[in-house]
Length: 114
Image (cartoon, rainbow, N blue to C red; front, side):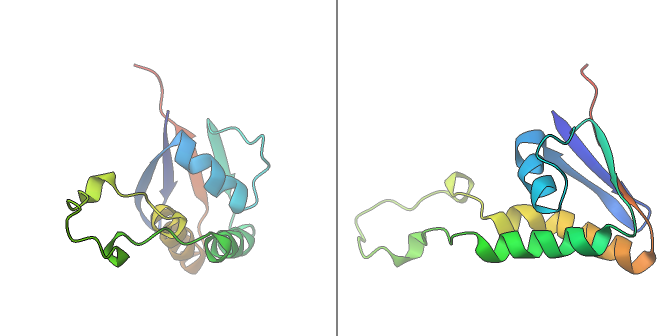
């Protein structure tokens, strides 16, 4: 399912459910939170931002492909590289920060099945 995060402070952030759920949990939403619909109120934004920043700081770094000394190995296409938690969380974290600065809520909603 596709999750859409919306705020009046910035453009929508779209994320697959499997990627959004760990970020919602890091932002302080309960592990059983429904990806169907929810909200970060203005009062919840500081804790949500701090939770995401803490999760990013605690995430193990990804192995750097450029550190390999094997020149005979073919280069890895960028689309095949793993995505770090900080990269995955950045659009949502940016939306939360802009919403906090503007004093507006952030809502999310799952897309309906076609």
